[in-house]
Image (cartoon, rainbow, N blue to C red; front, side, top):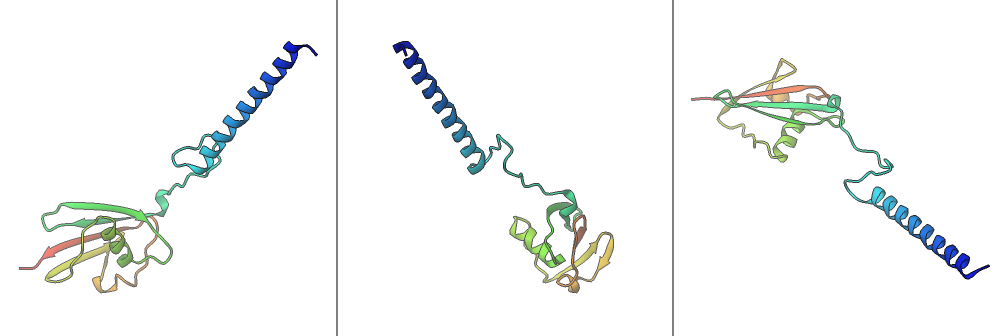
Length: 132
C-alpha cells in the first residue's frame, strides 16, 4: 500500500469516529436534556383538555378569575380550591362571607365541597357575596 492510501485510510477512520461522536452527542442531548427531542425519542407530556377542570371565582363586583388544572383521581371541589390557592390563586376565607357554589351549573352546598368529586371538563363557579 502506498503512503497516500494509508493516509486516506487514516483520514477516513478519523472522519467516521467524528461522525459517530457527533451522533452520540446528539443522542445524549435528545435523551437527557430539557427542551430537545431531535430524534423524537422522548414522549412529550401533554395534558388533554378532557383532563382539566376550571375554577372560576367571582368577586362581589362581578370580576372573574379563572384557574385551570389537571384533575387527579378522587379529586374533590375542596382539593381543586386548595390546588388553585397553592398555584397562586386566592386564599379563601370562609368567615363573614357568603359563598354561592356551582358545579357544571348545578348549585352545591358549600359544606359538601370535601365530599363532591370532580372530573375532567368540570367547571366550578364560586361567587363571593360579602354580607353587610
